[in-house]
Length: 408
Image (cartoon, rainbow, N blue to C red; front, side, top):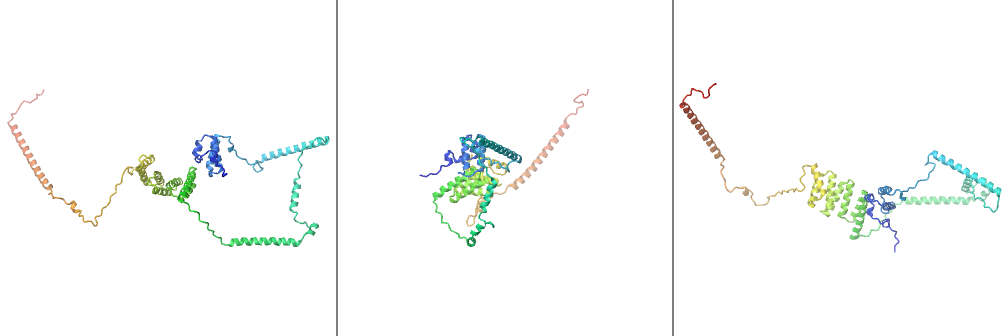
């Protein structure tokens, strides 16, 4: 039976999704935020300084009296305090010390006067002479050196033994230098590591899935560079459309649009009808100022899902920017050229008429000219006849001498 310690997430009944900015912002339970802060400070699930600082601010608003918000203050020293304050504290301490010494002397004088063996003696702290202690330490450090006037120690001094010790020390030093020089002059040996055991396909899928989940956690914490690194490790073991898709959105957050487009294309090779990959590819194309190509991708999304709101909104906005774009449901017709090389078909027979019809336009123009002349002549004759009739009638009519209207 293993004695493996329990993780803090299991101890406090938390999920990994709870280590998130949005969840901490929505949470109104001070105890739960305290537990989340404990997990973040422990470092079991990773090091997230920004998330930890945000959890502390949230806990400060929910439970200002929490013990987790207490911070240690360094001890005050002469260099960290103002000079006036330090002088004030030093003066008060000296006054207190002198006062305690006076009280102690008074008590000792009273005890000497009473001198009652039945009464216990007054407890006191023995005074330590600091200067004497320093002198003793210096004497202890210099005890190995013989003073010139210490004749007793000089009489016991063995010069041969001391010289032998010096020679041995020099030999040890030379040997150590020789060994170090030999190590530095040697060519470093390249040690080949034993080959790693080959993993089965199922094991690779499991490990790649865990690495992808770790990358997702980094992405939720807005640490996109670390997320891309985890996605790279996952794709090295096992390539999946989901991992390509996740790395593409991480590249978009890092403003690396070329890599994002390449990942979307890899995802579409595995799953051609992946709407997320199409939308993210269109987003990367739009951000990299390739709006016409992005419009075509959004049209492909609408062919797969006509009610997609993201594609509808973006196509409308792109058509407002670029007025010459066709409607999303427009279909481009492809024209194929057919070559007649090597065929025996005579295409002239297809355009040759079955019978030849004579052109009637010249005859019609001549007929129209003749009819016009005839009409003009007839009109002139009728006008002439009308004039002659009017003249004859005027000659035959009697002359009137009286006016039709009398003048008044």
